Length: 615
Image (cartoon, rainbow, N blue to C red; front, side, top):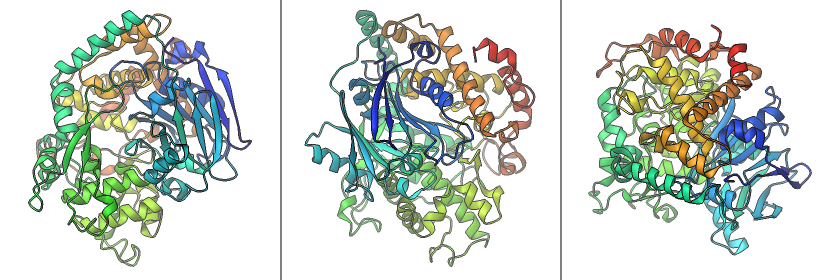
């Protein structure tokens, strides 16, 4: 129970779709979503495959709790070999698409091959069609979603699609569902575009059954009570969203600014959650309209925002006057502090474009920040950028590049390479603030030491959602640790990584982990699923998933040498704030991390570890 026990396999080259039973032996070992889909992926795909080759596969996948009444149980993931990184990619999204897919009777969809022309997949329970998408090719995510709903005459259809960026091969293109929820990182939308797959549309009405309905209702209710009573999930996130962190991290001295040259941003308060809620001088209205929730979510951290109608970005463009998905912390940082722009409306506009055309705002903003440093250092000029004065703090440049990158045009095509390839192209690879080709999120690891180890060892490239040690080092969850020391961070990172893999694979939002431990998740899974699901089993599942992902990356050509950080973070000390004078101590943490992982000194899982985890 809980699993739909059904896999939909779509061969885009042949134009066929077939159903097959879910491998339940694997489900008991990998749970679902991230873990189970990764198992399918590594069994079927050559690790050396070109991410944009038809031989690469893409899996849209749900968890066993997706579509149930558990809080936040609307998640789904896209698993593939990432176009940005060449590493294993699993990009998670909320909204309502995951619930719809599960309610249509599918645990996952495996996409193979490449269509000979643009297509979209239409699922209505057991009725599956591969349809011509020519009328939607070249259009935005917003127009595609509205167009598919109108064509089929059903506003309740849920759509996950790519924008023009995914079609044009922008390396960090997303898959966007429900207009502004995204499987956002690693270029999963780029892989989707390479397959000529414009969208997946789903209408599901079958429902999701659980093993022990009364037991599950009790466990889910208990979990919701914990979330409601927690200061972060019951108060902070509903009220301020993730943007509550902007001023907090800035004061901590860990807000990467001007492409990580600095660790504090003078304009942070102007782009903060507090600023979003303040009335504008021009019209007396705040940037923030309301919060919003994904399917089944009792936290409701999402934002809905508007832009000042007289702002330069939208003054004569009524299509951007309507309320849409507002800034979250990572996007506000990347579009703001990373580029030195503190114009809240400009950031909101750029974020709208990222949603509309399906580009990752983290990689986009961080790449723009790197390009701005290249420009200010004289490595590139206005001749290279198409006349754009690419200086830190230039809001108009940010907005112009958002539009150009979203369509893969002009210098936007250069930004669309991502910072690693862009900086390498111009002979300055050291200016790319990335790991394994993926740009850093919004935490400087000189001020939060554990995040340096998190970034360096993340299987999908630099990522905060694989091990959010900020919870412990800054927020004191589940216990407070000192952000400026390296001691104990190896064990902390491993614990977060393993637990996060279990949360992701269950079909839950990772934000529940601000309040929940696996002790809160295990009873819900145990009641929903067949078999016994204890906290210890979930920890083992999480560790197994992490090592499986590591094995894929090693086979793909990554080595322990890729578990590194840019020289700027390990050689150039923080200039201000509590971390002033400090660099990141990765050299101290990494050997200990390998040891606690049960890996060799080169970062390879030992035979003993593989045997213990049945890998």
